[in-house]
Image (cartoon, rainbow, N blue to C red):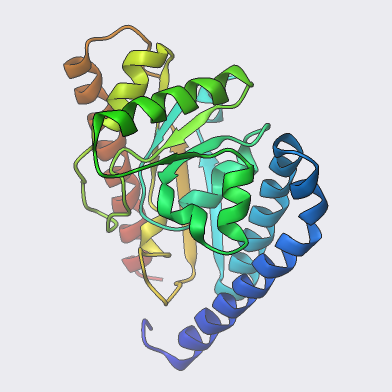
Amino acid sequence: MLNSPLLIARSLLFNLCYFFWSLLASLIFAPLFLISSRASLLSGKPWALGVLLLARIICGITYEIRGREHISKTPVIYASKHQSAWDTMIFLVLFKPCPAYVLKRELLRIPFWGWYLWRMKMVAIDRSGKASSMKQMVKDSKDVMASGRSVVIFPEGTRTRAGEAGEHHPGVVALYSFLKVPVVPVALNSGVVWARDAFIKKPGHIVLEFLPAIPAGLDKENFSRQLHEAIESNSMRLYTQAHNAHHSPA
């Protein structure tokens, strides 16, 4: 099934439609881009909804959100497992106002899309690991939260394969320590159908689950241990459920 002509054709069609929809959306929402950074935030949700709709119609990818009761009514940090480009869209749909993603600075250089990321005041970081970069990330995140927006960070720093547990980088600990707000762990299994850097998009059902918040005030070691355990164990559970469902007899 992975290399079937139909699956390849559907994946190719999706990628083409994704490109043209993103280009069209950047033109449609140009007035918002020009008005202000705050106005440009309104462009994120309709763009992401369009991509998710294309994924459902063309590739047969559906999704489910669990644990909505753990979504905070006030700005917090959401620390999410990262397996797919899908993960970078879904939070735009779920939160209002649009959250700020912690992302690598190089993404701001991408024509059109990167310009919107800059205008939407995402938290762009230099991944060299220098102390000044960490301080700037904390400062920018603090400013974002003061404006009423939550921060979304992927503690692994990059996408991992479904079923793999990645190492968490120190950025999330820095945010937790200095911003002194709860962190909501997020587990998911998006890599089962939309793997990292994969051309092929498989039909299937993605599950994203918000988990109970880790309260502010814990020491760094305790926080890191709780966060890693919450994200990785629950993501593995979701991966196992999806894998078993995919391979179960009809």
